[in-house]
Image (cartoon, rainbow, N blue to C red; front, side, top):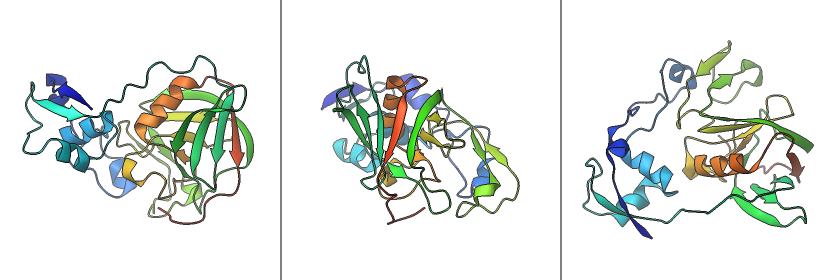
Length: 225
């Protein structure tokens, strides 16, 4: 654990206090920012808002200069060379592999959905995008989305694909972040491979165009979004 002092940038926002539950209504917002300071800080330090408050009882989060107790999340430098990514659909894990096949990093993930199961076989990374917009394709008829026409949701950490999109060579599939880190590993993504925003950002820093992505085992069949 380390001590952290709130800055003016931390507390100034801008924040998106109200985000509609329905995705169609989210498309009307100009940005999908953090709800508040505590959500922003919790994501930065890779914990839940509840744990952040428990670590800092009776402390406000709105004043620059306030000192907090937070996890030390410095992971050091990214690996200089990786051989590929393995997506284990049964275990709901994404592993970064070195040339000998050993794991350099392992991330919990939500993988696939009933409407759009995760693919099998192999793919390659095409590109990565930070702070992406989300484009809904009505062809996939995701649960809870009634729109019959395409729509776009603005960028931001609470965008449906979070803060990062890693585009794969399989059309419309990618590895991405999430606005709901607490549900990673317990629910399905809308067809792609979903990580916490902080893990997606770490992964994006390790991959490059052409990085191999291998899919292993069957899609987990418990839970759902």
